[in-house]
Length: 255
Image 1 (cartoon, rainbow, N blue to C red):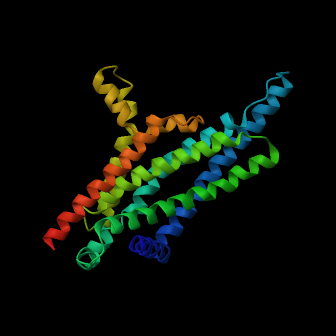
Image 2 (cartoon, rainbow, N blue to C red):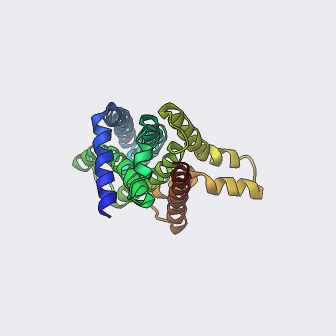
Image 3 (tube, rainbow, N blue to C red):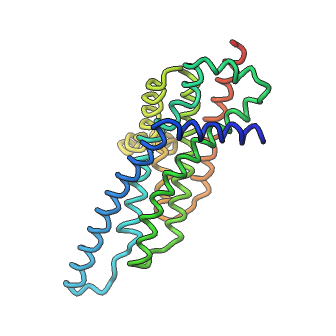
């Protein structure tokens, strides 16, 4: 456990010594801030129009602002997650330190978990910035807190699964750009599988829909925790880290 924490701390320091962390956090804050502003403006205008038309049913802040924002955050993560994972092992291979790492007495599990947890910590920090926007809603309205918490849980699980896959891809090349492009391609494929399955009702279409990461996030965005979606994301994390372990083991044998 101590080795995992040491590697986790080292990776976090590496992120913040380079422009990657600052660029990712700044870009995420800018884009989510814009989407939040647009959502609030739409909500205010629609509320004024409905009150002028004499509609007694108030609009829901969660449905009009929170849920669309969570969906937009998940899409933004699709672009930023490969930037977080592309350097995890590719940089080690490029600089030649991968041989020292895999021949050290540190177990593969500690190495993998330390690097993945560091990437997850950066991703969680990124999500934490959007909480400032969410907090302002409680000053001017009464949103339901539980769907917000459920939505962020879904974002963490979604991000954790894509980070695990990106970690595996990073072990397959020593070029960070290649790792980033390949990671984005795989993440995008897992994203659009749900769209592809919507054109067919066959068994293959249902399988594609189940594999899609987007399909399993919808319940969280609605404020519903479905055990099937939790199992899916945990399984995706396990598979990604398992493949990373096998890839790292092959590197150890070749070293």
